[in-house]
Image 1 (cartoon, helix red, strand yellow):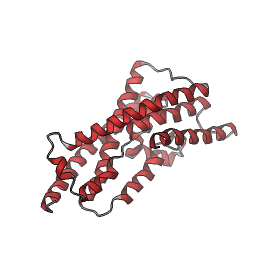
Image 2 (spheres, rainbow, N blue to C red):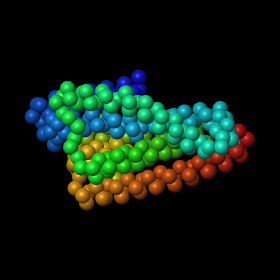
Image 3 (tube, rainbow, N blue to C red):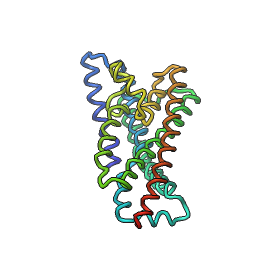
Image 4 (cartoon, rainbow, N blue to C red):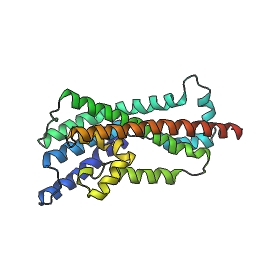
Length: 239
């Protein structure tokens, strides 16, 4: 069902945008750009999303973290292996669906140079790592808090708006666009799509890559800090 929602939701949003576009409203994006954006959105979202964080609080409260700590492989690798394997399965299902829908809407695969495709792939991988780490960081707040669901819900609200999942960032008013450019959510989904659609100049790509790299490093450091502090607290509680 989750895989189906990854496909259906962007397609429904695409249909709404296409209706707006045909009514003469200036969406700043053509028919072809809208189709490519939201269909590629399906694949990038599937490749970058993470759902591990919602299960971490329960594992902490039930004492299951202890078993993971005894494994020879660090449990971050254990979780990432699970995350990657599920993403591969989802993408195997979603990729043909996206291709068929694109051809049905008379829009083919974007024509990019090799360097541009490499940038799309690299920024997608980095986006996935940032999302994965932030998702785990929120889940690990359960080392200190009884309930973390409100933080996860708040994260999803901001992510749905500022990542470009529902609204392409290029069509936002300049005020909200500037805010989005300085928040991490753009670099968890929108950036690969912007490169795919050639919406960025070379200087803008360099700045965006610098911002994404900064958020990636920050996410790694915050994860290490939260994990080390959390494990100390977990061990001190006698779990």
